[in-house]
Amino acid sequence: MKKRITEIAVHQTSKTMAILYGFVALVICAIIALLALVKGEIIGAVLIILMPILYTVIIYIVLAIVSLLYNLTAKWSGGIEINPDYSYTRGIATECHFSLI
Image 1 (cartoon, rainbow, N blue to C red):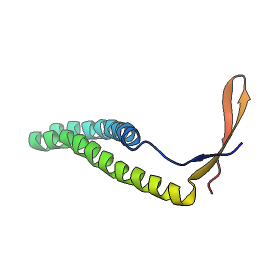
Image 2 (image 1 turned 180 degrees about the horizontal axis):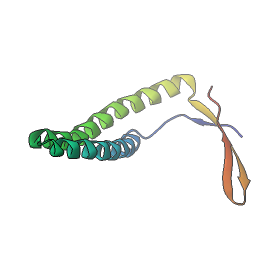
Image 3 (image 1 turned 90 degrees about the vertical axis):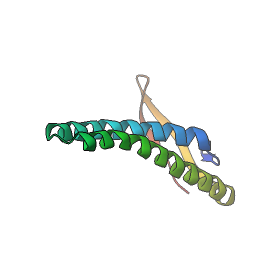
């Protein structure tokens, strides 16, 4: 049975993805900051640690705009069509088919 994604929650989608991207950026920037500290660049290390906060805010804003655009486009086009046909083996989903319009 095919289903359509005709609307996505703007705040929830943006918040979830911003947190995910922020966490990944924090891990990467922490490694870079440690390398900067090894070289003796204390101010650079502090700025590098602050970057994930800015990155998280930017990602939230961008994804909110993209989500709003998707919702407007989905009203016009009907949204993304998916076929959630799962194949199960021993209670574990092994295959899922999705198709775009």
